[in-house]
Length: 270
Image 1 (cartoon, rainbow, N blue to C red):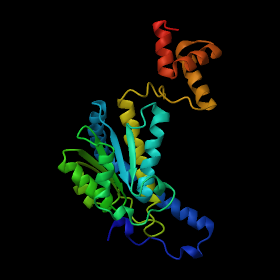
Image 2 (spheres, rainbow, N blue to C red; image 1 turned 90 degrees about the vertical axis):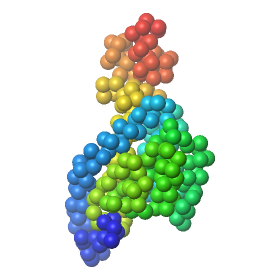
Image 3 (tube, one colour; image 1 turned 135 degrees about the horizontal axis):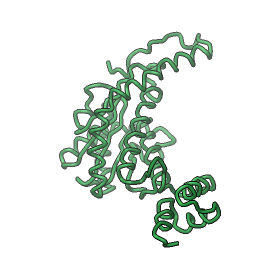
Image 4 (cartoon, one colour; image 1 turned 180 degrees about the vertical axis):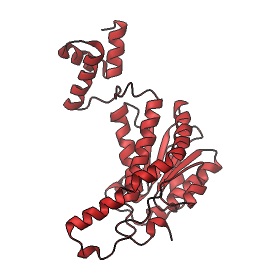
């Protein structure tokens, strides 16, 4: 029995009060940080290897199905606006394609060859790094894609919520987040999904920091896509240049990012 499929520690959920339900879910959620802490050594190895690939011109791929795939899409889609990187640098591939993000694609995760085909469509190579995401660790779409990656000398990692899983066997850098049974038996959108999201937060953020996309503690390459972000960026420019707010904003909009604006100011290219 997989830990993620094991019987919930709670029963007669329908007889619980709302307070009892929330308290029990919170009790289970509190186990996630401990699982994350235990996985830090494995995450460090994965991130170091993936960073090396990206720093040398490679790309990062996430692959998953269902909730795991959607978590990958969420993290990948946030990288361009947050860090100002090309949308292709971090790519999420989901079983069933983009339509499966909103609607379940029945059976898509069971196709053993489609994952590799989806990677080939994006011209994956041994410069890249591929991370499979699967709570169970046995999703054929992901497992077989990683297996074929390794046969083609493409580095692999995984984020999984069971020990000794098929996906870990096919990963050069496996990360196991053992959070145990879900409050609702088998509902891995809960603790397992939370742990996977935290892991991807760590992976993408650490890689972007190593790429130089963060300075100090600031997102100096963020996309200026709305008034809030323009105001945040302007405040950053003010803090680093002592310019008046309006002058800082003008400089920011002229150069398109905090980093470029501050660099221009420091070089006298204003």
